[in-house]
Image 1: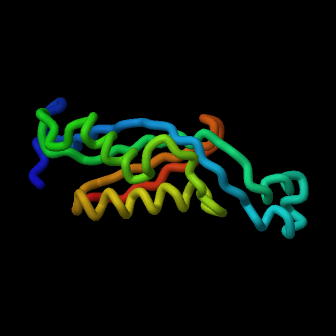
Image 2 (image 1 turned 90 degrees about the vertical axis):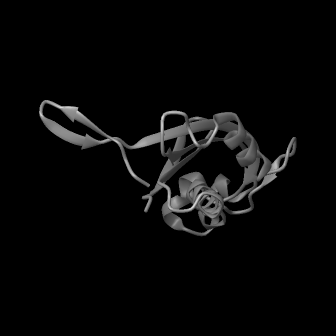
Image 3 (image 1 turned 180 degrees about the vertical axis):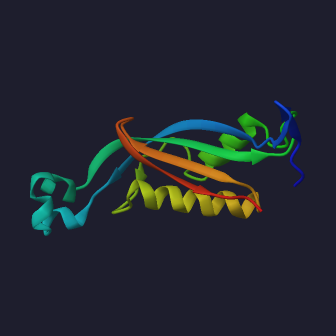
Length: 134
């Protein structure tokens, strides 16, 4: 993938283009270790299945200004990976585990691209995982 360069005060800099989409899905998960780890005593309740709105932000590298990946098509594809209109049963998956699984799916469809996936619980706490493109 050839990156276009721009001039900035006599210095040529490569341009990295990414697009991003967001969506939210209802899910239920738990953190079983919270029940047995003494350091987690104050959040022991997390060991029981509980509901969150999981918010996703997925960014992917594109190669030109006319986007070789269309926003709406990309977002629909991502959401369809989880099914439609159902509450996700995420078992004991953390936000990091969810993000890593999603990165793997995106890499299979769009290999050799930089990808960033953020997953949060209720727009409060979350993570971001990134992989570099080729």
